[in-house]
Image (cartoon, rainbow, N blue to C red; front, side):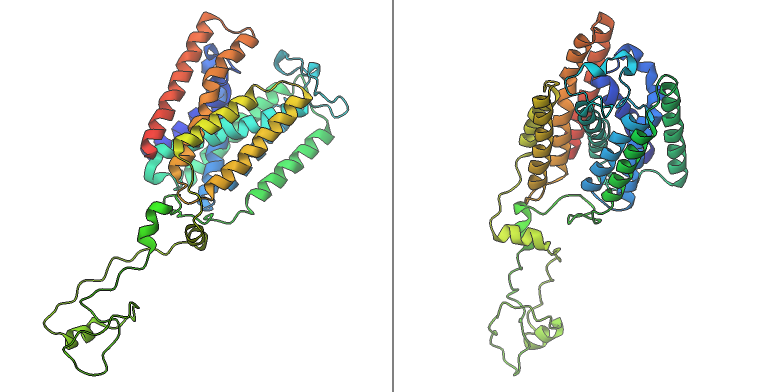
Length: 389
């Protein structure tokens, strides 16, 4: 796929998954994608471009996605503080705190939902389709300028539409902006490269261990220069002394030396230590997908109560810890990242129908449209998983 096709695909997939797939907006309102794409798609493109241009990895990308996950509900549409956003009575939730003017449960739902479903998952899926362009920037300077302008215009359009009926307090906006800036700054504390091959995004696992061992000595050449002429074969010490091949030819002119073995890249210290200590390999990609699907489903279906909020925060924190440890194991690759995104994308494919029923929007037209949106997302997930192989 071309760079432009990849950028356009991410530009449209982000709002499609962030609003329509989850069932928050019925599919009969799909033309609204034109209004939402500049904000959602623009954010996804800019976050990805900044991350890849600075040669940073997923820790930076996810932190920037979390910053946007707070920026939108707290500053742009202010749904985090609006007690009657889009006709919903958010004050009825048991976790609503009138003194703060917000619901911590919504804070977790909005921030994590935008960071994961709207940004991280679409980026991972489109990057899988990109293959060799996965770690490369897709936009040049004119494209970055256009995307930035679209994001700014789309965000202002959403802000202007909602602030006519509600405006958060200066204190709420100031604190939110400071947290967003702190998260943005924290995103760039992660060093570039992340200790993995920058070209492929894959760590060297046990399958590559045989390529990391020293090559066997070449029996047709001497490992050290002979101090006296002799036609008898010298003892091979097994150590490469870097002697010029002319020495071997002078010692044994009847034998042509074999070519040097192809150079192999040296393993990273972390990989070498993991292999030497017999570290457990990363789980299989399909196991990652199943685990993420189960955790995402449990977090989505948690009750809107204080125990449910605590459970949701625990699920997200536990998932982050487990995935971080998996990613540090030998054998973790881009295919694992793609399957991780696929597992997270499967949950809204069915919970979107559930949300339509809960909000009273489960009309035949909306259910049919929801099925088409889910089928489109499933096609993208399937193509991404296949491409990641």
